[in-house]
Every structure is written in C-alpha cells, then in structure tokens.
Length: 274
View 1 (cartoon, rainbow, N blue to C red):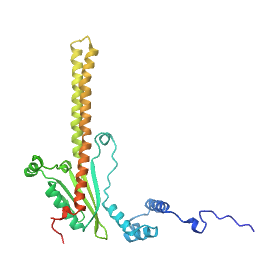
View 2 (cartoon, rainbow, N blue to C red):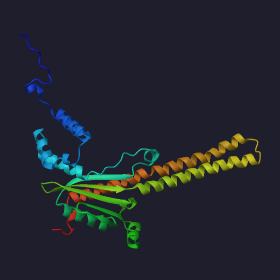
View 3 (cartoon, helix red, strand yellow):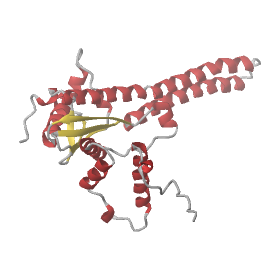
View 4 (cartoon, helix red, strand yellow):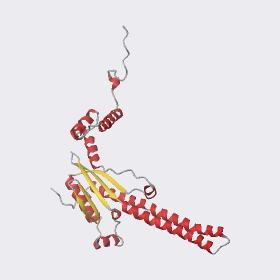
C-alpha cells in the first residue's frame, strides 16, 4: 500500500531544527499574537525566570538575557519625531546608556553627586531607581557657567535630565540618561523664524515703497528686495539648524558622565549608601 508523503513542516528528525534567527522570529511572533489576544491581561505577564528559562532553551546565555531585561526596564519610550521641527532643528531628546558595576543605590548616589557638583544641576524628583534633575538658576550657578576659562556646562540647555537604573544579578547596573532639550529647540526655532520673517518683511517693505512712489524700474527694485529676503531665510534656517549642535553637545556630556561612572571616577568621592 502506498503511503502519503510526509509534509516537510511536520517531518521528524534533525531536519526540523530551527536556527537562532528562526527561534527569535518564532518567539517574537508568539509574543505579538499573545498581545493581540482579546483576553490578554496582567495574568499573561511573564516573569524574569520564565523569560530566562525560555531563552536558555533557545540557546541564549542567561547573563545576556538578564542584561537585555535590565536594558528593557531602563528603556524610555520616546516617540519617533516627525515634522518640520525635527527635520530642520533635530531631536528634542538626547540619550545615552551604559552597564556599570555597583548597586542601584550607590550608582544613583554617584550620579546625583556628579550632577549637582559638576553640572550645576539640582534634584527635581527622586525614586528608588530613577532620579531627575534640572539646571540651577541661582547666582552661584550662573557665575560658574560664565566664569572665563571654565568648563562647558552643556546640560544647562536641558530642561530636565533623567537617570533610570535597573540592576543585574552579577553586581552590575544598567543606566540610561535622557536629557530633554525640547525647550532649547523651541527657542532656536522661534529665533530663526523671527529672523526669517524680518528678512521677508524688509524685502516686502522695499517693494511696497517702490510701488507707492511709482518707481519705473520695479524689476530692479524687486531684485534688490530679494537680497534681504534670501539673507533672512538663510540666517533663520541656520539659527534653527544650530540646535543640532546643542543635541550633539548634550549627548557628549551624557556620554562623559557615563564614562566617569564606568571607570569609577564619579564614585571615588561619593558617599556610600550602604
């Protein structure tokens, strides 16, 4: 009797083994389908142990899974920026992340000391695993920022700087720093818009004046009037575009803070929280 051929998808044997990429896709798709289930609720939440067990069975290293979990907990959902403001001026948030050694309390204490002592910031809010700062506006902070020959205080442009921490089980902590520079971007856009409008207004005024006095060579007047218009638009665009340098400098400032934290410089004089 002839037998039906076995479909490759259900055939037994080593030919059905999935590679790492396929396993990742299967788990991701299963999680997506689970999230779309109508009765999915908090009871469907997966514990760290279950995630580690599932990842281990898929051939992943437990230590790397724990690090991925910590990085996920420190991840801040920043919506993708679209529109003319983001296209012209750049991002409204600068971020940096790192995994460093220490406890959550000690690392947060070291960060707090660095922010207040070296960056002229002040505490805004405090939680067990998260802290936010804002620039100090007092006389002494202004004096330090304006002192000749001093260092740059690039976080001054940030409306708020936030630190989010998540511990790992081997004495390490995942740290994420986010600096909100949306107000600085709004100011640059406003200044650039004012300059551009000034140039257009100046050019339009020249043309209007020429029409009032019935200038014969109106074409030449329009050509001359185009100069302040072009200059105003170019200068306004350059001012708005300069916010990208603010983002870059803020990003570099965050990276430097994490560099010091990673190499222990920020913790040598920080008081221990234990």
